[in-house]
Length: 503
Image 1 (cartoon, rainbow, N blue to C red):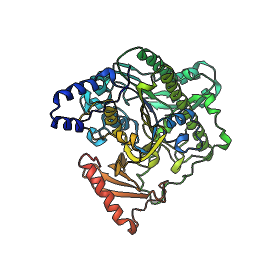
Image 2: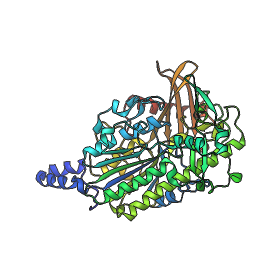
Image 3: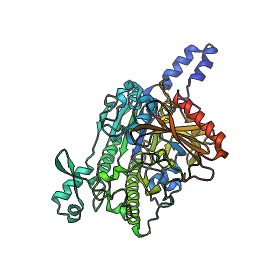
Image 4: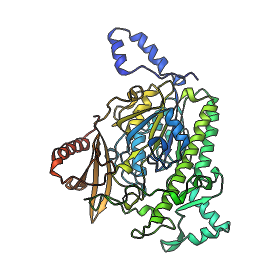
Protein backbone atom coordinates (compact mmCIF):
# COMPACT_ATOMS: atom_id res chain seq x y z
CA UNK A 1 0.00 0.00 0.00
CA UNK A 2 1.38 3.41 -0.91
CA UNK A 3 0.92 5.89 1.90
CA UNK A 4 -0.30 9.38 1.08
CA UNK A 5 -2.11 11.76 3.39
CA UNK A 6 -4.64 13.55 1.24
CA UNK A 7 -3.92 17.25 1.01
CA UNK A 8 -7.23 18.17 -0.60
CA UNK A 9 -9.35 20.25 1.76
CA UNK A 10 -12.57 22.22 1.33
CA UNK A 11 -10.76 25.58 1.31
CA UNK A 12 -8.38 24.50 -1.42
CA UNK A 13 -11.24 23.06 -3.45
CA UNK A 14 -13.11 26.36 -3.35
CA UNK A 15 -10.02 28.09 -4.69
CA UNK A 16 -9.71 25.68 -7.56
CA UNK A 17 -13.37 25.96 -8.38
CA UNK A 18 -13.08 29.73 -8.57
CA UNK A 19 -10.35 29.32 -11.20
CA UNK A 20 -12.57 27.14 -13.33
CA UNK A 21 -10.67 23.90 -12.81
CA UNK A 22 -13.67 21.90 -11.71
CA UNK A 23 -12.90 18.95 -13.95
CA UNK A 24 -9.29 18.70 -12.78
CA UNK A 25 -10.47 19.05 -9.21
CA UNK A 26 -12.88 16.16 -9.46
CA UNK A 27 -10.15 13.91 -10.77
CA UNK A 28 -7.72 14.92 -8.04
CA UNK A 29 -10.31 14.50 -5.31
CA UNK A 30 -11.24 11.06 -6.60
CA UNK A 31 -7.58 10.09 -6.56
CA UNK A 32 -6.93 11.49 -3.08
CA UNK A 33 -10.09 9.93 -1.72
CA UNK A 34 -9.31 6.48 -3.11
CA UNK A 35 -9.52 4.14 -0.15
CA UNK A 36 -6.44 2.19 -1.21
CA UNK A 37 -4.28 5.31 -0.98
CA UNK A 38 -5.36 6.19 2.53
CA UNK A 39 -3.27 5.42 5.60
CA UNK A 40 -4.32 2.79 8.08
CA UNK A 41 -5.15 3.71 11.67
CA UNK A 42 -4.19 1.77 14.79
CA UNK A 43 -6.07 3.17 17.76
CA UNK A 44 -4.99 2.02 21.25
CA UNK A 45 -7.19 2.93 24.21
CA UNK A 46 -5.83 2.32 27.73
CA UNK A 47 -8.39 2.13 30.53
CA UNK A 48 -7.85 4.34 33.62
CA UNK A 49 -4.42 5.47 32.45
CA UNK A 50 -3.45 8.84 33.85
CA UNK A 51 -0.22 10.52 32.76
CA UNK A 52 1.75 7.84 34.67
CA UNK A 53 4.27 7.54 31.85
CA UNK A 54 7.95 8.37 31.92
CA UNK A 55 7.61 10.60 28.86
CA UNK A 56 5.11 12.70 30.83
CA UNK A 57 7.63 13.25 33.60
CA UNK A 58 6.47 10.49 35.95
CA UNK A 59 9.59 9.38 37.84
CA UNK A 60 7.97 6.20 39.14
CA UNK A 61 6.58 4.68 35.96
CA UNK A 62 8.53 2.01 34.10
CA UNK A 63 7.12 2.54 30.62
CA UNK A 64 9.91 2.06 28.05
CA UNK A 65 7.57 1.31 25.16
CA UNK A 66 5.33 4.34 25.51
CA UNK A 67 8.41 6.46 26.19
CA UNK A 68 9.89 5.26 22.90
CA UNK A 69 6.58 5.88 21.14
CA UNK A 70 6.57 9.44 22.50
CA UNK A 71 9.96 10.01 20.87
CA UNK A 72 8.38 9.07 17.52
CA UNK A 73 5.14 11.01 17.99
CA UNK A 74 3.47 14.26 18.86
CA UNK A 75 2.81 14.19 22.62
CA UNK A 76 -0.07 16.29 23.94
CA UNK A 77 0.80 17.67 27.35
CA UNK A 78 -2.68 19.05 27.99
CA UNK A 79 -5.29 16.70 26.57
CA UNK A 80 -8.58 16.35 28.45
CA UNK A 81 -11.53 13.98 28.39
CA UNK A 82 -15.12 15.18 28.61
CA UNK A 83 -16.02 13.16 31.71
CA UNK A 84 -13.85 11.11 34.05
CA UNK A 85 -15.74 7.85 33.84
CA UNK A 86 -15.63 5.15 31.19
CA UNK A 87 -18.91 5.25 29.30
CA UNK A 88 -19.29 9.02 28.74
CA UNK A 89 -15.57 9.46 28.02
CA UNK A 90 -15.53 6.80 25.32
CA UNK A 91 -18.90 7.82 23.94
CA UNK A 92 -17.70 11.40 23.49
CA UNK A 93 -14.49 10.38 21.75
CA UNK A 94 -16.22 7.89 19.45
CA UNK A 95 -18.82 10.48 18.46
CA UNK A 96 -16.90 13.80 18.78
CA UNK A 97 -19.89 15.01 20.83
CA UNK A 98 -20.12 16.19 24.43
CA UNK A 99 -21.97 14.25 27.15
CA UNK A 100 -24.80 16.80 27.33
CA UNK A 101 -25.38 16.40 23.61
CA UNK A 102 -25.38 12.62 23.81
CA UNK A 103 -27.19 12.57 27.17
CA UNK A 104 -24.72 9.92 28.34
CA UNK A 105 -23.52 10.46 31.91
CA UNK A 106 -23.11 7.08 33.64
CA UNK A 107 -21.03 3.93 33.44
CA UNK A 108 -23.26 1.84 35.69
CA UNK A 109 -26.22 -0.07 34.32
CA UNK A 110 -26.90 0.62 30.67
CA UNK A 111 -25.41 4.09 31.04
CA UNK A 112 -26.60 5.03 27.56
CA UNK A 113 -25.22 3.91 24.23
CA UNK A 114 -23.93 6.06 21.41
CA UNK A 115 -26.08 4.14 18.94
CA UNK A 116 -29.17 5.49 20.74
CA UNK A 117 -28.03 9.10 20.23
CA UNK A 118 -26.55 9.42 16.74
CA UNK A 119 -26.63 7.54 13.41
CA UNK A 120 -24.08 4.79 12.84
CA UNK A 121 -22.06 6.70 10.23
CA UNK A 122 -21.63 9.50 12.77
CA UNK A 123 -19.57 7.22 15.03
CA UNK A 124 -15.84 6.93 14.54
CA UNK A 125 -15.92 3.26 13.55
CA UNK A 126 -19.06 3.63 11.43
CA UNK A 127 -17.53 6.62 9.65
CA UNK A 128 -14.37 4.72 8.75
CA UNK A 129 -16.34 1.65 7.67
CA UNK A 130 -18.53 3.79 5.41
CA UNK A 131 -15.32 5.29 4.00
CA UNK A 132 -14.11 1.92 2.76
CA UNK A 133 -12.02 0.83 5.75
CA UNK A 134 -12.06 -2.57 7.37
CA UNK A 135 -12.82 -1.80 11.01
CA UNK A 136 -11.75 -4.16 13.78
CA UNK A 137 -12.53 -3.81 17.48
CA UNK A 138 -10.48 -5.82 19.97
CA UNK A 139 -11.07 -5.47 23.71
CA UNK A 140 -12.83 -2.51 25.30
CA UNK A 141 -13.44 0.40 22.95
CA UNK A 142 -16.99 1.45 23.73
CA UNK A 143 -18.02 0.92 27.35
CA UNK A 144 -20.76 -1.39 26.09
CA UNK A 145 -19.26 -4.07 23.85
CA UNK A 146 -22.33 -4.18 21.60
CA UNK A 147 -22.57 -0.40 21.13
CA UNK A 148 -22.53 0.66 17.45
CA UNK A 149 -21.55 -2.90 16.59
CA UNK A 150 -22.66 -2.58 12.96
CA UNK A 151 -19.82 -0.10 12.52
CA UNK A 152 -17.26 -2.87 13.04
CA UNK A 153 -16.29 -5.34 10.34
CA UNK A 154 -15.17 -7.59 13.19
CA UNK A 155 -15.48 -7.46 16.98
CA UNK A 156 -13.47 -9.44 19.49
CA UNK A 157 -14.10 -8.86 23.19
CA UNK A 158 -12.32 -10.86 25.87
CA UNK A 159 -13.18 -9.89 29.45
CA UNK A 160 -12.04 -12.97 31.30
CA UNK A 161 -9.91 -11.43 34.05
CA UNK A 162 -12.29 -11.60 36.98
CA UNK A 163 -13.64 -15.02 36.12
CA UNK A 164 -10.21 -16.53 35.55
CA UNK A 165 -9.17 -15.13 38.91
CA UNK A 166 -12.10 -16.70 40.68
CA UNK A 167 -11.59 -20.00 38.87
CA UNK A 168 -7.97 -20.17 39.94
CA UNK A 169 -8.99 -19.30 43.50
CA UNK A 170 -11.47 -22.18 43.55
CA UNK A 171 -9.44 -24.84 41.82
CA UNK A 172 -5.73 -24.12 42.15
CA UNK A 173 -5.53 -24.51 45.91
CA UNK A 174 -4.00 -21.07 46.37
CA UNK A 175 -4.72 -20.46 50.02
CA UNK A 176 -3.89 -16.77 50.01
CA UNK A 177 -6.65 -16.17 47.46
CA UNK A 178 -9.18 -18.26 49.33
CA UNK A 179 -8.41 -16.45 52.57
CA UNK A 180 -8.71 -13.03 50.99
CA UNK A 181 -11.99 -13.62 49.21
CA UNK A 182 -15.09 -12.45 51.02
CA UNK A 183 -18.75 -12.46 50.19
CA UNK A 184 -21.53 -9.96 49.81
CA UNK A 185 -25.26 -10.26 49.62
CA UNK A 186 -26.58 -10.25 46.09
CA UNK A 187 -30.36 -10.63 45.76
CA UNK A 188 -30.44 -12.93 48.74
CA UNK A 189 -27.52 -15.16 47.72
CA UNK A 190 -23.82 -14.96 48.44
CA UNK A 191 -21.55 -13.97 45.57
CA UNK A 192 -17.78 -13.91 45.39
CA UNK A 193 -16.13 -10.53 45.08
CA UNK A 194 -13.13 -10.43 42.77
CA UNK A 195 -9.84 -9.63 44.44
CA UNK A 196 -8.67 -6.04 44.40
CA UNK A 197 -5.29 -7.03 42.97
CA UNK A 198 -3.32 -10.06 41.90
CA UNK A 199 0.36 -10.80 41.31
CA UNK A 200 0.63 -14.29 39.90
CA UNK A 201 3.69 -15.73 38.17
CA UNK A 202 2.03 -16.23 34.80
CA UNK A 203 2.57 -15.16 31.22
CA UNK A 204 1.03 -12.12 29.60
CA UNK A 205 -1.73 -14.17 27.98
CA UNK A 206 -3.09 -15.28 31.37
CA UNK A 207 -5.13 -12.07 31.36
CA UNK A 208 -7.42 -10.50 28.80
CA UNK A 209 -5.01 -7.78 27.72
CA UNK A 210 -2.40 -10.35 26.77
CA UNK A 211 -4.78 -12.46 24.69
CA UNK A 212 -6.36 -9.39 23.09
CA UNK A 213 -2.93 -8.04 22.18
CA UNK A 214 -1.95 -11.37 20.66
CA UNK A 215 -5.13 -11.35 18.59
CA UNK A 216 -4.46 -7.77 17.49
CA UNK A 217 -1.01 -8.79 16.24
CA UNK A 218 -2.53 -11.72 14.34
CA UNK A 219 -5.04 -9.35 12.77
CA UNK A 220 -2.29 -6.91 11.80
CA UNK A 221 -0.45 -9.75 10.07
CA UNK A 222 -3.58 -10.64 8.10
CA UNK A 223 -4.36 -7.05 7.22
CA UNK A 224 -0.79 -6.38 6.10
CA UNK A 225 -1.30 -8.86 3.26
CA UNK A 226 -4.33 -7.05 1.87
CA UNK A 227 -4.99 -3.86 -0.05
CA UNK A 228 -7.91 -2.55 2.01
CA UNK A 229 -7.04 0.18 4.51
CA UNK A 230 -7.95 -0.66 8.06
CA UNK A 231 -8.95 0.98 11.32
CA UNK A 232 -7.89 -1.38 14.11
CA UNK A 233 -8.88 -0.43 17.66
CA UNK A 234 -7.32 -2.22 20.63
CA UNK A 235 -8.75 -1.50 24.06
CA UNK A 236 -6.46 -2.45 26.96
CA UNK A 237 -8.28 -2.97 30.26
CA UNK A 238 -5.36 -2.32 32.57
CA UNK A 239 -4.65 -0.38 34.72
CA UNK A 240 -8.38 -0.57 35.43
CA UNK A 241 -9.40 -2.45 38.56
CA UNK A 242 -8.88 -5.20 39.54
CA UNK A 243 -5.14 -4.63 39.45
CA UNK A 244 -4.23 -7.97 37.88
CA UNK A 245 -0.84 -8.19 36.23
CA UNK A 246 1.81 -10.91 35.89
CA UNK A 247 4.35 -10.92 38.69
CA UNK A 248 7.21 -9.75 36.47
CA UNK A 249 5.59 -6.33 36.21
CA UNK A 250 5.17 -6.07 39.97
CA UNK A 251 8.85 -6.93 40.29
CA UNK A 252 9.78 -3.78 38.37
CA UNK A 253 9.00 -1.77 41.52
CA UNK A 254 10.22 -1.91 45.10
CA UNK A 255 7.17 -1.75 47.37
CA UNK A 256 9.29 -0.59 50.29
CA UNK A 257 10.38 2.54 48.46
CA UNK A 258 7.19 3.24 46.52
CA UNK A 259 6.67 6.99 46.96
CA UNK A 260 3.46 8.24 48.47
CA UNK A 261 1.47 10.85 46.55
CA UNK A 262 2.60 14.44 46.89
CA UNK A 263 -1.05 15.47 47.26
CA UNK A 264 -2.51 13.72 50.26
CA UNK A 265 -5.08 16.02 51.83
CA UNK A 266 -8.33 17.08 50.16
CA UNK A 267 -8.23 20.60 48.68
CA UNK A 268 -8.79 23.48 51.03
CA UNK A 269 -12.34 24.89 50.85
CA UNK A 270 -13.51 21.94 48.77
CA UNK A 271 -17.26 21.34 48.64
CA UNK A 272 -18.66 18.07 50.01
CA UNK A 273 -19.59 16.98 46.46
CA UNK A 274 -16.22 17.83 44.94
CA UNK A 275 -14.65 14.45 45.70
CA UNK A 276 -16.20 11.02 45.25
CA UNK A 277 -16.64 8.42 47.97
CA UNK A 278 -14.47 6.05 45.87
CA UNK A 279 -16.98 3.24 46.20
CA UNK A 280 -15.52 1.54 43.13
CA UNK A 281 -12.66 -0.10 45.01
CA UNK A 282 -15.03 -1.40 47.69
CA UNK A 283 -16.67 -3.67 45.13
CA UNK A 284 -13.49 -5.76 45.35
CA UNK A 285 -12.32 -8.11 48.07
CA UNK A 286 -9.57 -6.76 50.30
CA UNK A 287 -10.58 -3.08 50.11
CA UNK A 288 -10.87 -1.16 53.41
CA UNK A 289 -13.76 1.07 54.35
CA UNK A 290 -13.73 4.78 53.60
CA UNK A 291 -12.39 5.67 57.06
CA UNK A 292 -9.94 2.76 57.24
CA UNK A 293 -7.36 3.89 54.67
CA UNK A 294 -3.79 3.43 55.87
CA UNK A 295 -0.41 4.49 54.51
CA UNK A 296 0.40 0.83 53.88
CA UNK A 297 -2.76 0.41 51.83
CA UNK A 298 -1.99 3.51 49.74
CA UNK A 299 1.52 2.26 49.08
CA UNK A 300 0.19 -1.17 48.13
CA UNK A 301 -2.33 0.32 45.73
CA UNK A 302 0.32 2.48 44.11
CA UNK A 303 2.52 -0.56 43.63
CA UNK A 304 -0.43 -2.40 42.10
CA UNK A 305 -1.43 0.48 39.84
CA UNK A 306 2.06 1.06 38.47
CA UNK A 307 2.58 -2.67 37.91
CA UNK A 308 -0.56 -2.66 35.79
CA UNK A 309 0.64 0.44 33.92
CA UNK A 310 3.84 -1.42 33.05
CA UNK A 311 1.79 -4.42 31.90
CA UNK A 312 -0.23 -2.15 29.61
CA UNK A 313 3.00 -0.55 28.39
CA UNK A 314 4.36 -3.97 27.42
CA UNK A 315 1.20 -4.68 25.40
CA UNK A 316 1.52 -1.35 23.59
CA UNK A 317 5.13 -2.26 22.84
CA UNK A 318 4.14 -5.59 21.30
CA UNK A 319 1.71 -3.90 18.94
CA UNK A 320 4.21 -1.22 17.93
CA UNK A 321 6.85 -3.87 17.30
CA UNK A 322 4.42 -5.83 15.12
CA UNK A 323 3.60 -2.70 13.10
CA UNK A 324 7.30 -2.23 12.39
CA UNK A 325 8.05 -5.88 11.62
CA UNK A 326 5.08 -6.20 9.28
CA UNK A 327 6.19 -3.19 7.25
CA UNK A 328 3.14 -1.15 8.22
CA UNK A 329 4.86 1.79 9.91
CA UNK A 330 5.06 3.94 6.78
CA UNK A 331 1.36 3.41 6.04
CA UNK A 332 -0.17 3.63 9.49
CA UNK A 333 -1.23 6.39 11.86
CA UNK A 334 -0.98 5.25 15.49
CA UNK A 335 -2.88 6.84 18.38
CA UNK A 336 -2.37 5.99 22.07
CA UNK A 337 -4.65 7.58 24.65
CA UNK A 338 -6.08 7.06 28.15
CA UNK A 339 -9.84 7.25 28.67
CA UNK A 340 -9.46 9.23 31.94
CA UNK A 341 -7.14 9.63 34.88
CA UNK A 342 -7.10 7.86 38.22
CA UNK A 343 -6.31 8.78 41.84
CA UNK A 344 -4.15 6.40 43.85
CA UNK A 345 -4.23 8.03 47.27
CA UNK A 346 -4.26 11.62 46.07
CA UNK A 347 -6.69 13.75 48.10
CA UNK A 348 -7.05 10.68 50.38
CA UNK A 349 -9.11 9.20 47.56
CA UNK A 350 -9.06 6.52 44.87
CA UNK A 351 -10.38 5.93 41.39
CA UNK A 352 -11.68 8.71 39.08
CA UNK A 353 -15.16 10.35 39.11
CA UNK A 354 -14.20 14.01 39.71
CA UNK A 355 -13.56 17.17 37.72
CA UNK A 356 -9.98 17.48 38.98
CA UNK A 357 -6.99 17.66 36.67
CA UNK A 358 -5.69 14.30 37.86
CA UNK A 359 -8.89 12.61 36.62
CA UNK A 360 -9.63 14.60 33.47
CA UNK A 361 -6.14 15.05 32.00
CA UNK A 362 -4.97 12.07 29.98
CA UNK A 363 -2.02 10.91 27.92
CA UNK A 364 -2.48 11.36 24.18
CA UNK A 365 0.19 10.63 21.59
CA UNK A 366 -0.17 10.38 17.82
CA UNK A 367 2.35 9.19 15.25
CA UNK A 368 1.78 10.23 11.65
CA UNK A 369 4.14 8.83 9.00
CA UNK A 370 6.12 11.48 7.19
CA UNK A 371 5.52 14.08 9.88
CA UNK A 372 8.00 15.44 12.41
CA UNK A 373 8.37 13.19 15.43
CA UNK A 374 9.48 13.54 19.01
CA UNK A 375 7.65 16.81 19.47
CA UNK A 376 5.34 18.09 22.20
CA UNK A 377 2.52 20.55 22.33
CA UNK A 378 1.10 22.45 25.28
CA UNK A 379 -2.02 23.31 23.29
CA UNK A 380 -5.31 22.60 25.03
CA UNK A 381 -7.15 19.79 23.25
CA UNK A 382 -10.10 17.56 24.02
CA UNK A 383 -10.65 13.92 23.14
CA UNK A 384 -13.65 14.91 21.02
CA UNK A 385 -11.02 16.40 18.69
CA UNK A 386 -9.52 12.99 17.84
CA UNK A 387 -12.34 11.91 15.48
CA UNK A 388 -12.16 14.94 13.16
CA UNK A 389 -8.37 14.83 13.28
CA UNK A 390 -8.24 11.24 12.07
CA UNK A 391 -10.78 12.05 9.38
CA UNK A 392 -8.61 14.89 8.08
CA UNK A 393 -5.39 12.88 8.23
CA UNK A 394 -7.00 10.15 6.15
CA UNK A 395 -8.37 12.53 3.54
CA UNK A 396 -12.00 12.39 4.66
CA UNK A 397 -14.35 15.20 5.59
CA UNK A 398 -15.84 14.57 9.05
CA UNK A 399 -19.57 15.04 9.60
CA UNK A 400 -20.37 18.72 10.09
CA UNK A 401 -22.43 18.14 13.22
CA UNK A 402 -19.37 17.32 15.31
CA UNK A 403 -18.44 19.40 18.37
CA UNK A 404 -14.80 18.39 18.17
CA UNK A 405 -12.39 19.99 15.74
CA UNK A 406 -9.29 18.71 13.99
CA UNK A 407 -5.94 19.43 15.60
CA UNK A 408 -4.05 18.18 12.54
CA UNK A 409 -2.31 21.55 12.16
CA UNK A 410 -0.61 20.99 15.52
CA UNK A 411 1.27 18.06 14.05
CA UNK A 412 3.19 20.45 11.79
CA UNK A 413 3.11 23.38 14.19
CA UNK A 414 2.97 22.16 17.80
CA UNK A 415 3.50 25.70 19.14
CA UNK A 416 0.25 26.86 17.57
CA UNK A 417 -2.65 28.02 19.76
CA UNK A 418 -5.63 25.69 19.45
CA UNK A 419 -8.28 26.24 22.15
CA UNK A 420 -8.89 28.91 24.77
CA UNK A 421 -10.34 26.31 27.11
CA UNK A 422 -11.47 22.71 27.47
CA UNK A 423 -14.69 21.55 29.12
CA UNK A 424 -15.47 18.67 31.42
CA UNK A 425 -18.41 17.68 33.57
CA UNK A 426 -19.42 15.15 36.20
CA UNK A 427 -22.78 14.15 37.64
CA UNK A 428 -23.23 13.86 41.40
CA UNK A 429 -26.20 12.97 43.54
CA UNK A 430 -25.88 14.89 46.83
CA UNK A 431 -28.37 14.99 49.69
CA UNK A 432 -31.34 14.51 47.44
CA UNK A 433 -30.17 16.92 44.74
CA UNK A 434 -29.06 15.88 41.28
CA UNK A 435 -25.99 17.99 40.54
CA UNK A 436 -23.86 18.45 37.46
CA UNK A 437 -20.42 19.88 37.94
CA UNK A 438 -19.29 21.78 34.84
CA UNK A 439 -15.54 22.39 34.61
CA UNK A 440 -13.64 24.84 32.44
CA UNK A 441 -9.87 24.42 32.04
CA UNK A 442 -8.15 27.45 30.54
CA UNK A 443 -4.43 28.02 30.16
CA UNK A 444 -4.04 29.06 33.79
CA UNK A 445 -7.20 28.15 35.68
CA UNK A 446 -9.67 25.38 36.41
CA UNK A 447 -13.20 26.50 37.25
CA UNK A 448 -16.09 24.27 38.35
CA UNK A 449 -19.72 25.25 38.80
CA UNK A 450 -21.98 22.79 40.58
CA UNK A 451 -25.53 23.24 39.31
CA UNK A 452 -28.85 21.58 40.02
CA UNK A 453 -29.95 19.58 37.02
CA UNK A 454 -33.63 20.44 37.55
CA UNK A 455 -33.31 24.22 37.26
CA UNK A 456 -29.64 25.06 36.63
CA UNK A 457 -29.19 26.83 39.96
CA UNK A 458 -25.52 27.10 40.92
CA UNK A 459 -24.97 25.96 44.49
CA UNK A 460 -21.17 25.95 44.60
CA UNK A 461 -18.12 27.02 42.60
CA UNK A 462 -14.43 26.15 42.59
CA UNK A 463 -11.43 27.96 41.16
CA UNK A 464 -7.84 26.71 41.05
CA UNK A 465 -4.89 28.79 39.87
CA UNK A 466 -2.49 26.56 37.91
CA UNK A 467 0.18 29.23 37.82
CA UNK A 468 1.03 28.49 41.46
CA UNK A 469 -1.16 25.49 42.35
CA UNK A 470 -0.83 22.80 39.69
CA UNK A 471 -2.00 20.20 42.21
CA UNK A 472 -5.31 22.01 42.74
CA UNK A 473 -4.88 22.02 46.50
CA UNK A 474 -6.89 25.15 47.36
CA UNK A 475 -10.24 26.41 46.09
CA UNK A 476 -9.84 30.19 45.79
CA UNK A 477 -13.29 30.99 44.40
CA UNK A 478 -14.07 33.17 47.43
CA UNK A 479 -10.93 35.28 47.05
CA UNK A 480 -12.00 38.79 45.89
CA UNK A 481 -8.76 39.13 43.95
CA UNK A 482 -10.04 36.55 41.48
CA UNK A 483 -13.52 38.01 40.95
CA UNK A 484 -12.91 39.00 37.32
CA UNK A 485 -11.35 35.63 36.53
CA UNK A 486 -14.32 33.88 38.10
CA UNK A 487 -16.72 35.91 35.97
CA UNK A 488 -14.80 35.19 32.77
CA UNK A 489 -14.66 31.46 33.45
CA UNK A 490 -18.39 31.43 34.14
CA UNK A 491 -18.95 33.12 30.77
CA UNK A 492 -16.99 30.35 29.09
CA UNK A 493 -19.02 27.73 30.93
CA UNK A 494 -22.36 29.25 29.93
CA UNK A 495 -21.26 29.53 26.32
CA UNK A 496 -20.27 25.88 26.26
CA UNK A 497 -23.52 24.86 27.93
CA UNK A 498 -25.66 26.55 25.29
CA UNK A 499 -23.93 25.45 22.14
CA UNK A 500 -20.86 24.00 20.45
CA UNK A 501 -17.64 25.73 21.44
CA UNK A 502 -14.89 25.78 18.83
CA UNK A 503 -12.75 28.40 20.50
